[in-house]
Image (cartoon, rainbow, N blue to C red; front, side, top):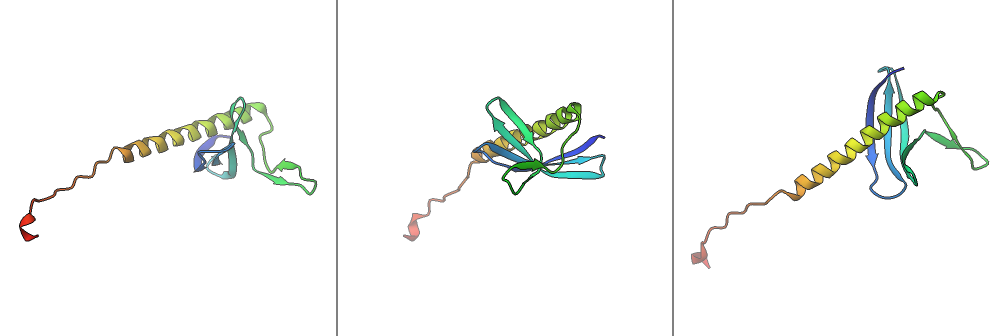
Length: 110
């Protein structure tokens, strides 16, 4: 199974949950709502989950093998970090925009 697309849907600048990601496998199957979480030891991913009647959260889907989990986490975190860099670069570009105004000295009409 190959990861063929990773899309960063949302970036949150504050809080523990930092992003929402969708991942496509083999151009045939997509998993939405993978969360990027900032923990005490760095970033990790949380798979889509639902709350059970007893208040516990259970993954809706998840990798079975640790190698696949690592591959998925690496791809998701790489895409998330690139999206954050792109967003920061866009903000810097917006800050660098200079408004040029041409005022003519036409005080004779006052």
